[in-house]
Amino acid sequence: MKAKTMVFSLVVCLFAALVCFASQNDMNLGTWKLNHEKSKFAPGATKNTTVVYETSGDNIKVTVKGIEVSGNVVGSEWTGKFDGKEYPVTGDPTSDARSYEVVNDRVMKLTIKKDGKVTVTGRITIAPDGKSRTVHTSGVDANGKKFKNVALYDKQ
Image (cartoon, rainbow, N blue to C red; front, side):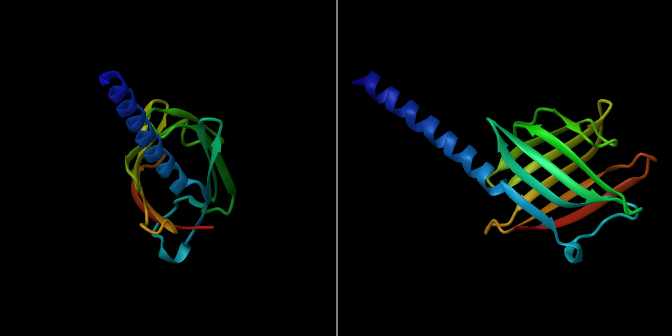
């Protein structure tokens, strides 16, 4: 009887963990468009106008499209897990690794690195209704200048 209880308890715990992981992913999945009017960027900052989170096997793929102050369109891709570990970034000359770490069901930490050095840290918070999110980032740009940005996104 104890073995059945232990197996049942283990199955319930695993199911609960999967539900928590799935709900975190589900809230992030989809297309997010920048709300320019509600966002605040440091002078000269690149604005990520569209961010898409989608599943890619057992990973999450994040595709970012943005625009530089000069008007050039830029973009990057990242594929990994929201486990706090670094995964490579492609397409972004200012970074080569990124990590996301789940804090709770609506909040994640973000860390961006270039050549092994942290250049940007941030916090992504999804609204309780899941229709918007706020991304607070701070760091040091390529010229060594500190910055802080607050970007608000609406789910499409």
